[in-house]
Length: 341
Image (tube, rainbow, N blue to C red; front, top):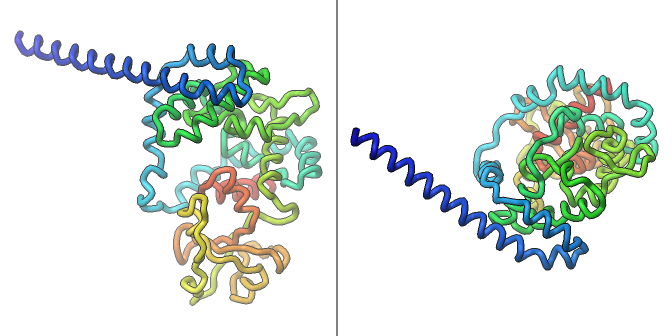
C-alpha cells in the first residue's frame, strides 16, 4: 500500500503548489489592477465602475495560454497553403447562409451601401467570416480576459487599453452581463474590440443604440463605418483571380518596402503597378472583368507559382486593416463574391 500513500502525497503536493501559484497570481493580478486605476480614472472611468469590476475579477490563465499559441508568437513558422483554409471558410454552407442573410437584409444593405460606398456583399462576408452570421460570438468574460492578458504582459499596452475601453462601455450603459466574447476581447456579430466599438459602432435602425450583439442593422452599419474609416474606395473591387504569363518576372516585381504593420503579411505582395501596366505584362483576368487601367494593384500567389494568383487593390488593404492576415482577407473577398452571385 506504500505506493498509494506516495501517489496520494504527490497529488496533494501538486495541488498545494497549484493552489499556491494561483493565489500568488491573484495577488499580483489585483496589485496590477490597482496600478492602472489612476490611469482609468484620468480617462473618465467612474471610480465606482472600476472598483466594482476589479473586485469581481480573478486571473484567467486559460486566455494567457491561448495567446501564447498564436502564430505571431512564432514568426518564423512556415506559411501553409491557402487552399485548405479557403475550403473551410468559403464553403457551401457559409455561402448559402450568406446568400440568405444577403436577401433578408437587402433593404438595409442597399441603404448602407448608398450612404457609405461599402459593398453589401463585403459587409455580409465580414459578418459571416467573423461569427458565421452570429452563430457564435464567444463566451469569455471580457473584463476578466482583457485584464488577465494585460497582467501577463506580452502585449500589456494593447490589453490595458482595451480593458479600460471596456469599463468606458459600462459607463456608457452597456450591461455588464453583455460583455462576453472571444478570449482576446473581441465581441458581438462583427467581433469588435472595445476601443473599436467606442469609436465606430453605429445605430443602423434609428433606435438610439448600437447593438452589435443581436441587431443585424447595427452590425452591418458598424462594419461599413469601420471600412469607411479605414479608407475604402467606392467603386473599386477588393481584387480578383488572375493567370500570370509564362516567364513572369517575379524577382523583378519583388516588393522592396517594409510595412510597419504585420510586415510578414505584406511581404508576400509584389510592388504596386496600375492595372494597365499589369495587363501589358500579359496578366489575364480569370473572369474577364477588369477595373479601370489607372487603379493600383499588387500581385500575390498565396500557394506559390503555378497556382491561382490574385491582383489586389487598395481595398484589399482595408480588409487587412480589419484582420491582418492574407488568408482572412482573401477569404472575405472570395466569400463576398460568392454571396453576391
